[in-house]
Image (tube, rainbow, N blue to C red):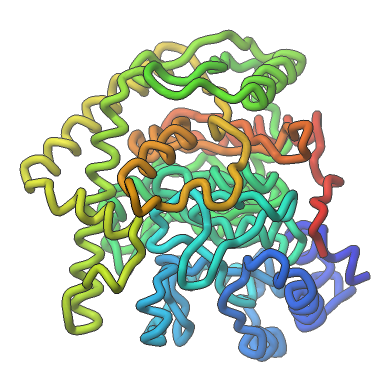
Amino acid sequence: MAQDLAFLDGTAQAELVRKGEITPLELVDAAIARIEHVNPRLNAVTIPLFEKARAQARRTDLPHGPFRGVPFLLKDLVCASAGDPLHNGMRLLKELGFTAPYDTYLATKFRQAGFIFLGKTNTPELGLNATTEPEAYGPSRNPWDVRYSTGGSSGGSAAAVAAGLVPIAHANDGGGSIRIPASACGLVGLKPSRGRVSLGPDFGDAWHGLAIEGVVTRSVRDTAAVLDAISGMMPGDPYAAPPQRRPFSQEVGAPPGQLRIGFMRRAPAGRVPLHGDCIAAVESAAQLLSSLGHRVEESHPPALDEQAYSEHFSDVVASHTVQTFELLAQSIGRPLTRDDVELWTWTVAERGRRLSAGQYLGAIHWLQVWTRRVVQWWTDGFDLLLTPTLAAPPPPLGTLVADPRNPGEGWNRLLDLIQFTPAYNITGQPAISLPLHWNAAGLPIGIQLVAAFGREDLLLQVAAQLEQARPWHDRRPPVHA
């Protein structure tokens, strides 16, 4: 039974609880046993909260949400849970033993859904990299091949779900950090539309609207059900996504009709060419979509070939890193020094310090106008865009770690790998990574679908259609529970 539980999705586990076939405590104990057995090989869970989880599972007033009693992991970044460590991947906060004084709105919604928090997952320092190799906790390892990266910044969460430690884990995405690890670890990773999930009470928005909260899962129905549980405007939010027509869960299995889908099998102009495995993944997905009755053609928004957006995106991230330093300085009572953070983090902040207020606002203005050029492609008659999630397979560990001889060069390597994800953080559109392809080495190669703003419903309909046509549920990585 314990082994069977490992790869049941969250919806199925919750159904067992509702039917009285298993208790929340039994689910939690089984998940803890899996973590204790497998996590030493993966380093996905860095802050265990096992006894607190058991106490929560024993409570008679556990919320009767859609995931009542289901084991869950929080990413150790932004989403705070009262009384628990919150280190944001930082050695400094780990050494200071920093804990969160209250639940964020998102943590509260996770609890109301019935999830039980078993611990926190590994993340790069401040979520600033597409690999999960922080100095504070060491690298997370990909369960498909432990020599390779899990992606980032939600790499610990993705490794844990892929290996069957829990069915669902929290993730967030400021430039691809849900979709990148979903691709690298063979999972479903949906970045919702801007404003769909509240970042309160600590933030109105994060990275000037680039960042959004979500989860990584093994099934489309889990992704939809969690989105139902966490979406919705909260008091004081600066904006909200358009309201959905009906619960997102009802989109799973709903026919999308015949859609017009464009696809990209080349890199945007000026970028490093795509790896052959990623081209093969997109071509295979395009053929599958065509076989399902959709009109598929090679087309993409011309504005994606304007490479200036990468520089402006980088300026926004760097500027907000400086602001994060200032917030941390207020918390610890002194300015941060070079010794407090990793070389990569310091390099990003140094870039931000060189920018004036006018240059920062100029970057925002450019990106907002560029967004109008991008989304015109959907307005002109396309329903979805198909791309690879990443431009290459998961890289070996160490590939994206800053080189002391030339730390700035790491940013270029990063942008070459993630060239298909940050655009939709900029535009605010929903995008999903799906595990439809594995290469000859056995590594997952995700494909990305992008819809118009507010159209998660369409993404979930098509994702469920693809999941049924080419199921991935029976795939198991070499390292699993």
